[in-house]
Image (tube, rainbow, N blue to C red):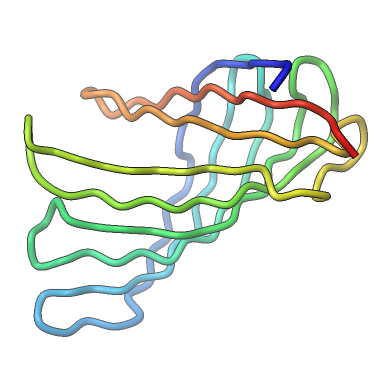
Amino acid sequence: MGHRATGSFEITRWDATTEEEDGGVTIASVLVGKEFRGGLRGTSTARLLTVTGRVPTSAAYVGVERMTGSLDGRTGSFAVRHAATMEGDGDERHSTMTVTVVPDTGTGELTWIRGEVAITVHEDGSHTYAIEYDFAR
């Protein structure tokens, strides 16, 4: 990828609805709002499907998110796909996460965007991101 943008985001909305609960396992749908600062400036709305296990720190989610605003000065919007799994606690915590730009979802000056997003959740609960991206038809 030829470009990289970094910054932070704040979760401005978290509306969870329990869909199913059985034996300590919960499936929920979540509507999430975010506000981005840094190289990516703007807002997003995400729809997630989450599952939490009997162990509170074991969970997974999948989802789609549409981001609207500007990326390194280019205005438009694009969508990303999320997939993540978390387990363990403290030093034993392990997680995998992929956040990928969905091909052909870019609009405006972000048409043809392709890329990957890395999200870091810090100990204080704050979030930062790094997006590696390019434009290819």
